[in-house]
Image (cartoon, rainbow, N blue to C red; front, side, top):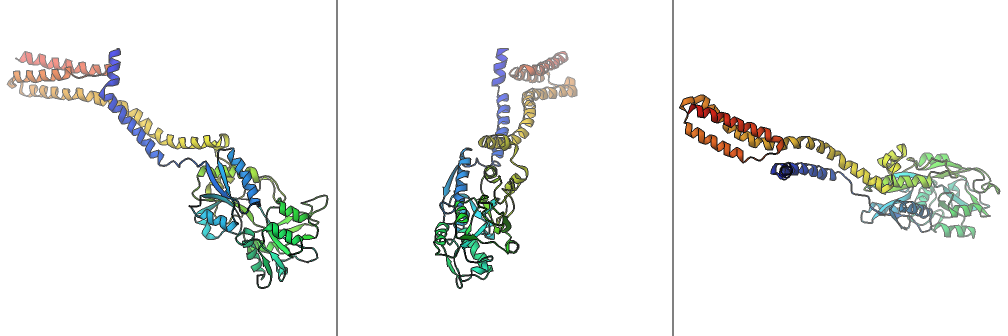
Length: 434
């Protein structure tokens, strides 16, 4: 029995069949591997605008959250939204994502970029010196106004809004101070007004709201702005939002607000989209002064077309694997499933076919001699006594010698013994005729 096992497992037929089946399975793996995206990178780069800005604070929170999932987020400061978009559009820059203020992106930016979500509202704050009476941007004509550095989001938005109100550098003293410097100049009465864009939780906005001698402009035409500029929403800052005890502000204030949008390159790894959406939900999903819990992240208010994966996430939540498994385990499980589908599709038929192929290879050698024996028997039936008995006996001896050299596993011995029995029958018939 031991000798037969060794013979079976070392037989040429077995190894030919086994290697052929293995090659088919390996081929299925190879084909499947071409449909699997590479593993996501463990390092990505994000622009954060100017150093010390609101986007940098959000990015640092994202950096901490991503690090807990094995992703290193590298932060890169820029001069503002225009540079953020330029770097995002440049595949050689290495930048993968950025937070971009609504109203800054153009239609051309949607070619290589996509939005994941709007994260929160960041109103347009126009602070002015007490004593002036301002409730419309057109009232700033002839005043001294800082609209932020060129290339920044606030500068780009301010130019659009002021142009709609007939305010420009020809009739108004426009300055381009960074927000912190402009705020100090306003406090020192070196400016009449400044325009700032940012979340109400920002330190700068909180400081200016509490500064004596400054007032916040109430956008009396807020609804008209939201109709003319689709990326703007008209909102109300409730009385007492900043300080209930001191009642700051002392009345409801109408504001207009773009959203802060999370924008990525369209070649970002799909697994990172789910992770970024999960992080964004954790960081911006709570209630704030200007929105209710669960209102953000939102598909509304984005300038650049929304990612299909992000839209699916906001509608259905994370996938099953990402909901219950750590990020990297879920990623590899996803990849393994893609591999297993074609593997199973090939492996099951191969497992059914391989024994048949192996059996055919063994029996084919027996059947080859059966064919020669059948031919001799046919001639014997046809020619009878006219057949050359000596030649026929020699052919029969050749068949018997050939059959004696056939090596078969025990399972196929019956076929071999049947052939030998048939040889003896033919031999007996020839002997009787002789």
